[in-house]
Length: 352
Image (cartoon, rainbow, N blue to C red; front, side, top):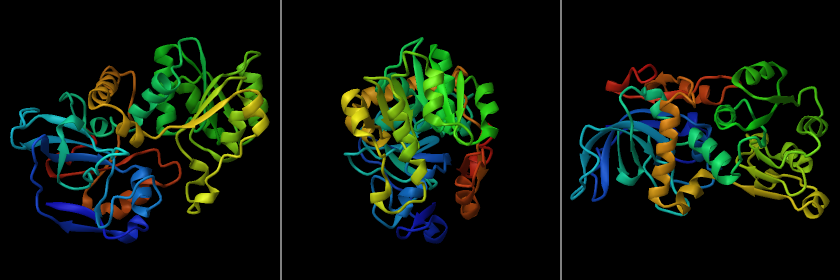
């Protein structure tokens, strides 16, 4: 089979190689999956650079998150799912936990407890993206912060994939969103998507606008994907007793020095207003959540996507041979389209 392998840690375009590898054999409790489509996330590229929250050990097959395919074989004594069944694979490595197989290959072996059956009418582009961004949005809103109908939720990076999904989910649940973007051009898009309020840091003072927008009671729940000074300002603007969950650090996107990955919080605000700032990482959630609860959450996401509550933009398909173009697109400014690797009988993966 063909596999896209990183020979060492480094820039993906420099270290990735297209190789031929033996098709793996599933063991008990595992299934062999014939991959049809798999996305290229920014986190996948950070794993290859060696600056994510775990290292796969090199050489390593790229793609550390998710894919869609069909069950090609089952390990000894494994009864479900059935051979030929179409499944989404949550390949997110659990931390703590054993390593998972990379998804940028034609076949991979996965624990059957990481497989979610998907309906035939859910296209490959959506099915291969169920396990990371939509699940993150759902967990942040309903699990981490338990935001209730009628409450306000403040979020940074509202134009990101997760940010857009948070807006859609909040609208469905009756939650009012205050959305922070960094470009004036993005404001209209966020409003059209259903964002209740939009603050643009390009030409507005963030702290002042949060205070004006949230009203006299203030906002008590927020999620941040930027970190740095923006994350600090959000914490500062929260009402007393407020909670901030940080799930990304876009402000340090190209930073390689761990000491620079900071949120300069104001101690007086945190102490005297008893605010909470904590992190969320999907990999650690998978490592500390039971397989049953993980599948239950994934099933909920599948239903929200299938019912049209959450819309996942169509990806742009690439064959493995065009990996340099694909990984470059994944981090191009405002590219707007998620690149996907698609395989032979899944060459139509971006369309159906």
